[in-house]
Length: 406
Image (tube, rainbow, N blue to C red):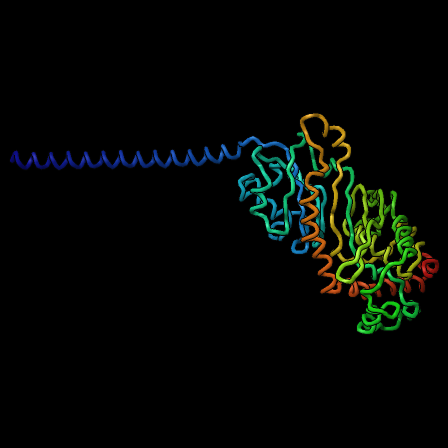
């Protein structure tokens, strides 16, 4: 009898010890998990609490393969690529990638779909150990970070910008005077596109690629470009902006032809425009209007009415040749660039690297694409619509268009 009692007692003691061990193991496991969670949370907290300071990044990119500069989730943009690179390099967190307001992200200029930039500027908050080499490791070859600099606490790359300079490269045959016979075409007559393209392919009895601007043509070009300088109402040079909208008022500091060069047996002109700010498609429509005047489709009198409250339909020139070249911070440089704490934002030290990227990617792409895809001959073909619209306006006596025609 005592043996049985002892056996039962021993079994009860064993069960009790086993339960104690399980409880201890479970407690240790819970404690370990809790420590692991706490460690993870602590790591995230420490990562998010990294001291961040205001910086600017200067970068260049070939816009051909992107849907513009500004981030648009689910769309391939320059900002999406840049922020992804910053995330992979551990300079921003996942939360900051998802909501860029946390790092006060701002770009100096929005470039449209397909438009490139040589010296774009973005401002944001980053840790002190940020460097361009690690960012570039995670960027595609057609986007490069050239420089990173500390800026003042209140710096905003858009609001602190004094002006922006763009360049537009186009083949000079686009500026050749129009065939007088074509200008006499009846507006009701249907135009044969193949015949028109064949006509555009020959200028003065020679292939259009052999066309070269004369000094007189260059002078006329610069005179025409100058007509667009100053403060004007540019509502006709964008879309969805009403004539009385204050945002339509823009100031163009200068617009001029800065260079003419020949490559691949074709002549190109570099048009440079500097202004305080620009609206969507504004520069491309300005270029288009200049082409119309140089081709003698319209006279330069049309510029005055393009700035009036009346609506004039101006075609949009191809985006291929457009690129953002400089973002100017004159006041900032003067005020803070020599204070001993901050650097000027002129980026002269990056010029060699920037120029190499520009030539290898942006300029090469513009020239190769024009030669292979004949972008401008096809654009000039669509210019027919512009000519027909002017003719229709003339017939309706709209805006007294008679004075526009040669």
